[in-house]
Image 1: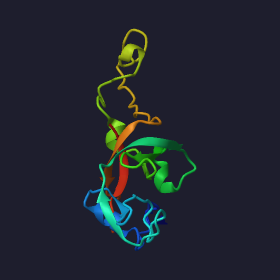
Image 2: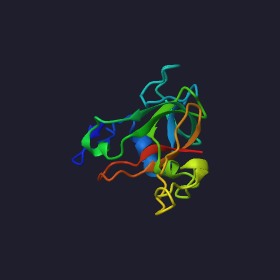
Image 3: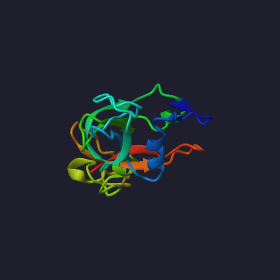
Length: 175
């Protein structure tokens, strides 16, 4: 990763990983595979760690997986990330090969989730809180993001960061 003027970290695209980012720009998740033994490998590299072949190909994968682990990012963080904190960063094992794990944060569409803005889960019995004794003004319920959990199914989504020439980044949405 490298840092940009707005302070966001962006991937350092090298020769081995360039196809991954080219496919990401098309909204496709593809993983490097050995053209001889057929095993997937990530991160991309010139030689297969299983059979030592230099033949490779890029295979499309479903983009689905399960949360293998996660952390909640809290300050201190680089300034460009402090406004978003706290936020979950996921380590996802792919459905096609649990040994292939990718990192990404939880996509906004997951954080809004079904029922977003409909007052679910706030106050007693799911009812919005009132402004005090006797009723009064009704407060808008606080938004609660879904919480990731180990083993939860997710799917990849790609999001273009506000950085020129940066490829879309893979993120994860709960399903």
